Figure 1 (cartoon, rainbow, N blue to C red):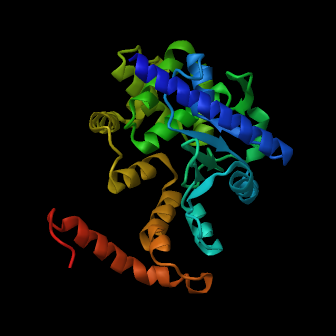
Figure 2: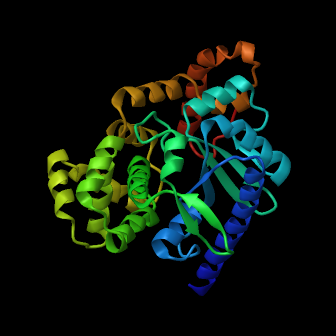
Length: 321
């Protein structure tokens, strides 16, 4: 346990040091950013930026600053592109961005993964407020190494953590633990939070997250949440989340699609799903086509699906012809 704590604390300090470098560079170019999850969440909820394990750094920026931030990360901080892949055309990047909420980068020397978000969800959703509105509501979190960063206010943190966990399927115990910690140490004004959840389109995910955390950790369920839970009938969702947690693995594509429909506007979720069905961004890297021939990816998709299905059904040890 001591070795595990040492590794977590060492990684947290590396993340903080990198956040400081990122902050210095973005400040020079007058680019604002908000720290999500990770170190900021650990400090706000656990009062120690190294108490909660985190695999990457997550920041939120204005969508209009994405290309500028990418140039700064690659040219000034030695990050390499992850998603979209290096060499992606402008049209490929445009498509990938349209079905995602972030871009991913990797720092080879420090072994750090960085996700640069412009939204909370990949599907168009009421919680994806304008960056200007979000910035006006941010609070400052004082982290270790005398670092201060902007992060989400407590009510929005509640809504974001529940939405993120509900969409992902709660397959990581620490996501549920975050909600349990909020329940114990930072109970909100439930009527006010539920009202805001309705405005942000996250009432169902809030009810699911709080009910699941109370169930897993045997905590008292707030009466307002219990009442709302009966109204929206989330019993099956709680059992499903428990199954994901037991397996400790990502939900299948079908399960992920079902959760998107459950926790996002139906028409927006359908649009996102259709785009992912009609074109597989993974084909961009396997088959390089110029922008002018982008339409061919729609024709390639059926053959790509067939090839992957054939490969998945081939018995282990069978040689590829």
